Amino acid sequence: MEQKIIDALVKCPLFDGMSATEIEITLSGAAYRLVDYDKHDIYALAGMPYQYADIVISGELICRMSSLSGKQVEVSRLRPGNLVAPAFLFGKDRKIPVGVETGSKVKVFRMRHEEFENLLRGNWQLAENFIRVLSNINVFLTRRLRVLSLFTVREKVAWLLMERAGEQGTNKIHLYRSRQEIADSFGIQKFSLLRVLSDLQKDGAIEINGREITILDRSKMR
Image (cartoon, rainbow, N blue to C red; front, side, top):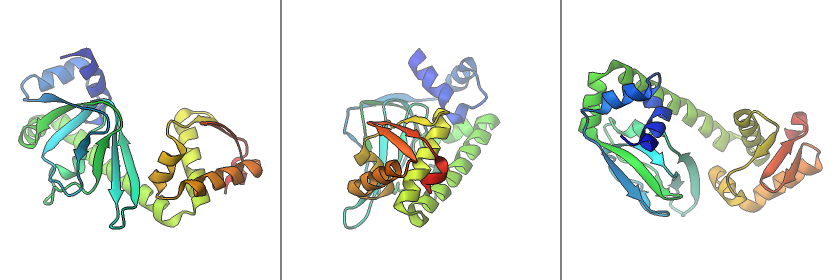
């Protein structure tokens, strides 16, 4: 198995606690294939039945939910090591509720549903890790729903900056997404995001330098 594939699988929470060698041994008898997508390809349309267990090896998948009016909200971005839609693998209704497209060239490690089920049945550690993955998704979605439905635009932006500061371990944050992409992730207009960022800077809460934002005073971000 190529090193690039192993490196991505080691990051996957499904294989948490397993070494690269253990992962290779575990998958040695499993039937899988690698699937490539070009940038801006459609990976899945909302409402399609989900029948594979895919793990992102390289690139980025963007998951968006759309309303009947055409308004879109970015739900998540999947990067190397992420499982794709694991909560829909064993559901009674396995239709994926979001549209998924590629943000770059993407390679996925793919197993059929039945093959993945057999893998879990034969390895308790994988099964336990998979249960933990599903639990973490539930926590993520609960937090996401709270932010999207109850927070004001200012609170949403402050929450995002605080989250990124925690992830990057510094008050000087680098935003990897454009202003438009960030606005889409909250389901708000770009000008609303820009206005809030401007207000936060005027209030002395942050300093903006392109995609680099420094948190100066957390108490002023509320």
